[in-house]
Length: 269
Image 1 (tube, rainbow, N blue to C red):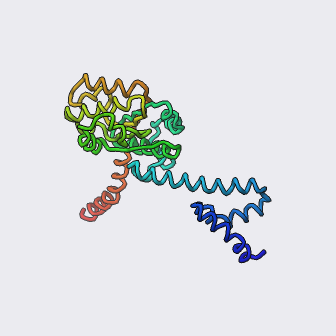
Image 2: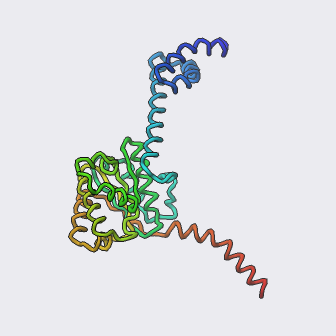
Image 3: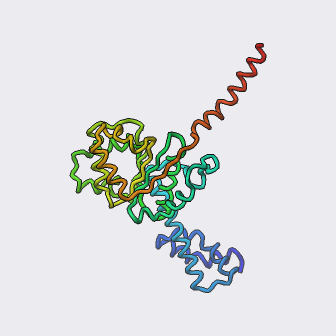
């Protein structure tokens, strides 16, 4: 059978698949028919191959959509993390978290360490992994989240549960500790944490040790204790204490300038 006659034979099937909204199987049908003939697949195996192609395409679209809705920074995956530069990061612990068992158990995750050590990268990568495993994710820098919480301050808790930051499977809050919250903000943060308690996981990154968290939450030790009580009841703590990626990149950028300055000094002498 020629390619032209084969395509003509497939045209009615392609048309039916398109009418049913199965555009991807319609697109790949000629290729799958060739594969079935080459591998001598049974009709049932061919049907499974066709349906698998549709399911894979559907999942790709779901992941793409959920990544856009999540607010996650792009390009940060576990595969892209430089473990060699950051040997103090517990790779085994991160890989265990990447199984997403903590999400099924409604456990929280807390990344602690100085700025630039990869907390955001790993938090984002775990968010990407969660989406690929079927969980909904919302990512916020703390300052941005505060704007949203203030706008919703008068909304009854029952209605707040429709908000993405309340009903997602994983809420990632980045940059806790870069500035102190005032009392209103601290109370709004507590309302968020207490409402999500044992309903959904939270993943937080902070450059402050937990003993210093009262400084973040309006200097209120009682409120801070209540927040930590909710967060730490079911928690995995990831400590990273290593070199700063950003300082390394800055050093690389400055190196040519320094070499040029040395050369200029030598010529002057």
